[in-house]
Amino acid sequence: NGKVYDGNAAATGTLSLGGVLAGDAVSASGSYAFGDKNAGNGKAVTASGIALSGADAGNYSVNRPGPGLADTLAGTSTVTLAANGKVYDGTTAATGTLSLGGMIAGDEVGATGTLAFADRNAGTRKIVTANGIVLSGADAGNYIVNTSATALADILARTITATLAANGKVYDGTTAA
Image (cartoon, rainbow, N blue to C red; front, side, top):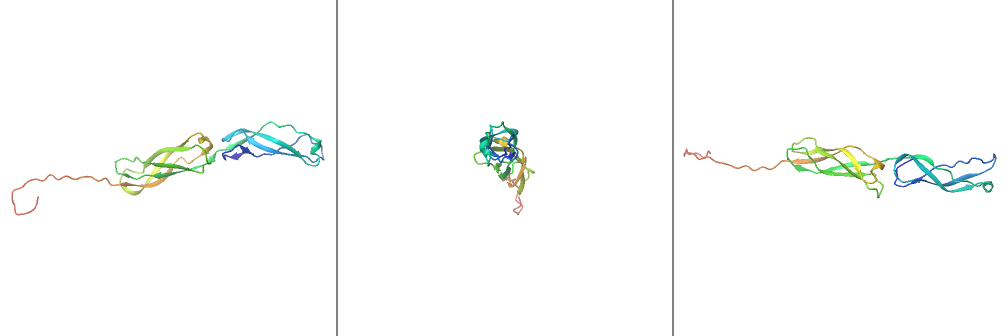
């Protein structure tokens, strides 16, 4: 049977018996395994520890069958963005952290993408988008993820310094400068 990636090579299946005489009660059971834990199509599944049971099982011996084929579908993971605020710098450049949810413990997977504010202007709770999200790492091929994520962050107004260059004047009885 096919399955969704779960981080292990365990498989399920059914053994069918050929050559059993009509009316005889014989069935088979065993354990099943994919060749590896990774996602993929048309992967070999082998049966081992095959045992016969039933009232007539003692009248038969069974050979080990060749592998069956099944798919291990990529698991679904969700990428979330935690965006960092910044001081106005005239650009839409953003920084933050992409986090993965729904991963199998111990899997080696990371995510990267391009982060940008919706516009370059100062303001609060501005939309930051991570686009082009891709996975990396030894187990990246076992997952599918969203290719974009959004979060909110602030662009603080930039503090500037004003310098006064005062002009002199002839006395006119006022404080006007």
